[in-house]
Image (cartoon, rainbow, N blue to C red; front, top):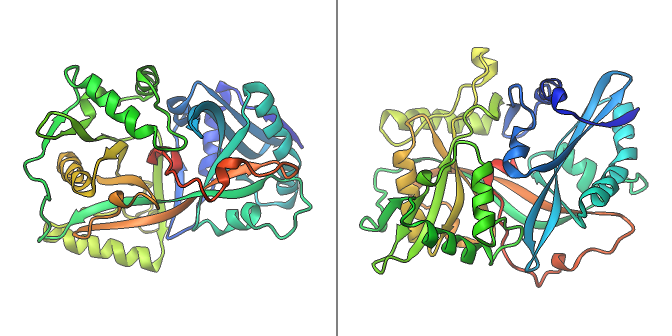
Length: 375
């Protein structure tokens, strides 16, 4: 078996291979990226590599590394995010990838100067956790996975009838040239308190926004206090078919939740989930509305931003955002109908190296992870 770097003309073939895998969990899903497998990477960075594991001309596995400049331990440095590892289930492919994993990381480190690698794993993905986080044997040449942070992917599906906006008179405006400088200053101040943050000055903000397809300054919702200081912001965004999460089958627990949402919709409380492929034999994706650039000074401001984003979204859409376990102000409001999925952000380390200092328990800084990039 051989490892090759994918080229742009391989995008359609890799997308088809990627879609052939079903991710198990409370909802079994397939991910469809259409004809451009690489587009989510292009939003994140200009630097990325996708490796193909091939047996002759048969594609048996893929793995990608996206290199981003981030704030880590107070300094801007390039780090690599491992994404979209998919290996055919037969033994030959699994053993083949295990032989190439560390050499691929070493090549990324040499090409891009990355000293640190990260990956995001769902705690519902038992197969991946058993294979990488808690392997049966340590003899295979695989990196060590160290848990860096826990986070929840929170989805907002509706409001109970007695829910009230905690700050109904809060000044919330759309982004514009008039408030751009204040918005950038606020995001820089908030980002400086987080690990893996991708904005540290005005230029990094503009670079990030420029790469993000169909996300404009006018899409931001910005909260102001009585002194016209920014106290919160969010950028609701839909992926617009760039990456569709198709529900194939619901577990009993997820099915019951979907039925409850159907009942709540008749009362005007909720928005429903997409029907599974197993029932209608039609591939239809979830209607996510991602909350990016999400920052708030307190829980009431955060909930008021939720009210604005939820009311502005289409009736078929529900909100999705990431909440680091240590950031209590972003916990699900009690009077909203919501769900959460637990994820872990892991640091990947060579087995011969000592764990880095940022993994020490004294480092309690939360992290930044946009919801579109953690799935």
